Image 1: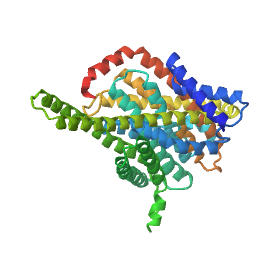
Image 2: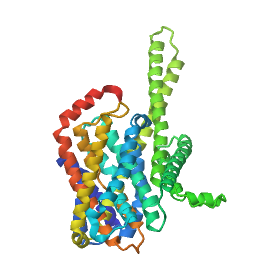
Image 3: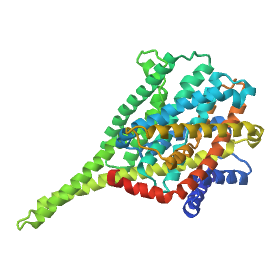
Image 4: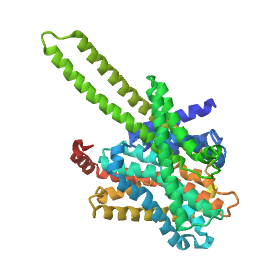
Length: 462
């Protein structure tokens, strides 16, 4: 166990050094170093020994990654770019699955995959990794609106892909009948139910956060809120049954966790903004009082105390976000270490053609979807206009991650193409992590002056 802790800490330290010194994105550094450490220790398993245990680890760590990413989103940004994010994270995913069904025979005709199998396969490789995107973007000056589109799409895309996978793909794979009515009903139920539950749990979490001035206690409440939202949503049917509802309704733990965290962050941000206004007001009061000949020391002291309390509250909230960020970095390191342990290179080589076909197909599909989105944004004032540079960034921000592996573990063991699906999903995750990340760095680096100018043009609007 001590070797495991030392290895994780060493891998993370070296990855951060590579990122700072050589500008190598942390996801690439982490996964490369994880493979090296795994080889050095003779292939011994430090975290997981097989794909099933890896999936359990991912489920354990996903909420903290979602919490960290959700804290970067603001309600005002979601309102401003809500339509754009809906088109990117919902419509584009749905259309991608439709396109996949149309070209499936051309891609994997020799396997005679059923419609449910195609939906399941493409839902897994359409899920993106917001951690990798945020990690790369943090090293560059990019327009705020572009970052919101990419990071928001990566975050909500996961929820959409998981809903398609579980409630449509697996449902049909296990014999369920897919109809327009079923898809509409289940989508509305899961999305609206998860969002409502997330808001409720978010406000419950806020009650706990307001009950303490201890920074560590505040951090724990935020973690409890995110994990509680995820777990309650995943087992919502159990609560209904306890209440006598006899229901089998499932909600999206990912979406509920995101909404709960955004709710907490929104109220916290409003409190910080209000605190800034109070600081400015109290400072003005102090100056006016000090200028008077018969100034009151008590009034000045009271104003100073209010400023001190406000600053302490703001610092506490900001340090809590930093702590969550640190936990997310450690969680991400654990994921890459575990991924290095479960990857079967022989299996990947056996299905190398299928992996390359799927990687190229999903890349082209995503590029087309982002192009359609860019064309649409140029035809309406209700969405942020996307130019050619932004289209490139949006396309290659589709890096895959651990959620794809989790979905892979949910497929019934009796499924005849499970081995091939495992190879394809893991292979696509690996290729996208390396290739997409490198292309993003080159693309952003080549246009860094233009992006910096676009950021400056946004001014103080954000």
